[in-house]
Image 1 (cartoon, rainbow, N blue to C red):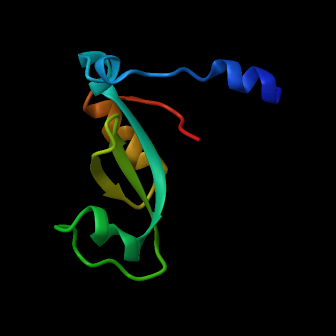
Image 2: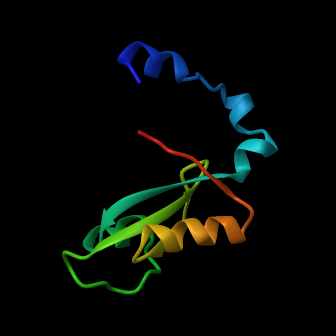
Length: 88
């Protein structure tokens, strides 16, 4: 995909559109360091520093799950009827 076609694939989302029920069914996965988990998930248990974890976020950016594999995060999203999307 060329840079120009990548730009054209991006869409702008208004606050009103983002609040619609359809957007609440989206989720995305990001990699995080274990030592950073406490900043966005204060109730999480302490994890070994330096460990790479995968965080499942709701479409609104709310962290939903911390796990040790991307596959587990995606499987959890599917079990909750969430559609995972790619974010860059």
